[in-house]
Length: 355
Image 1 (cartoon, helix red, strand yellow):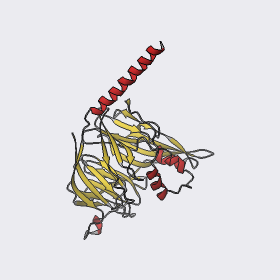
Image 2 (cartoon, helix red, strand yellow):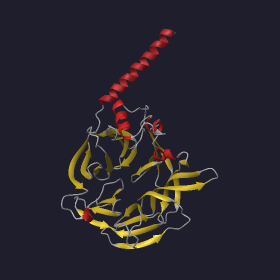
Image 3 (cartoon, one colour):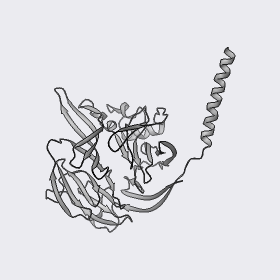
Image 4 (cartoon, helix red, strand yellow):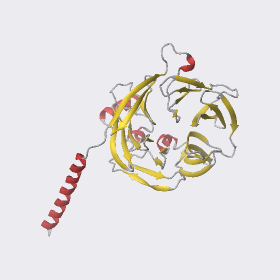
């Protein structure tokens, strides 16, 4: 019986190894990039109205125009789909057509909607012409973090809401579907943290999200689980995408790079850098494919994506870290792929194919 049991186990192991070998032999699709142009934040000889300091707040409209929130000037710079400067939207100030503190913005058709100082929505045409200001209803009481148009009647947004108790303030990090008046239709996720005792957790607690024509995708920056939830545009749960994931520690070279930038004596050093996040960001491309970012490209690592079609992983995309200390880049994905180079204050724009 022991011999028979051993043979069964051995046969099963050989079958698993055979399957693994077969899976390795399946050719993966290849991601090919073709560079189109570069947008420089401070091009030589440019008028100051065209310049910007590249940040993390970018939007693309249906015509491929790029909108960049320049935090230094408080304005939004618009570039056409050839990379040429098109217009400047507003500036920092107290006037009706100015922004006291532009929090975030989104685009619908040719109109740009800007949250100003958390309590107003200011509307502009993409050419920069001011349209109107609307004060948000006081009962909404949220801090807007990001919004985008889900369809003609709804938005999807990340907001923070607050609830005070005798001991602390509870911050709810909500991801929800909203109507056009910013009333919540369906809450998709609402992780909570306590201020001030748990505030250090906020960076990893926010819910990541993206969407295509059929689904909304959400994920947490877990260090132990690789799971993407899928919802309909009405907020109905439709299923999960789950990948096998082994917790990964930072490499020795990555840890050395981290310690160059982050003091190891920091109270929460071990919380941030014990293990790598399983999922760092998620995006959808022009074909509706889901790109799951597993590494952010800093601290000596590459920018790495798993790419899914219809729930199945079909390939990977890796943007190599060149090893320089100045390497600080992020990827923005729409009909084109935008490599945002924060160190050199420029944006490289690529066409991409997966075949």
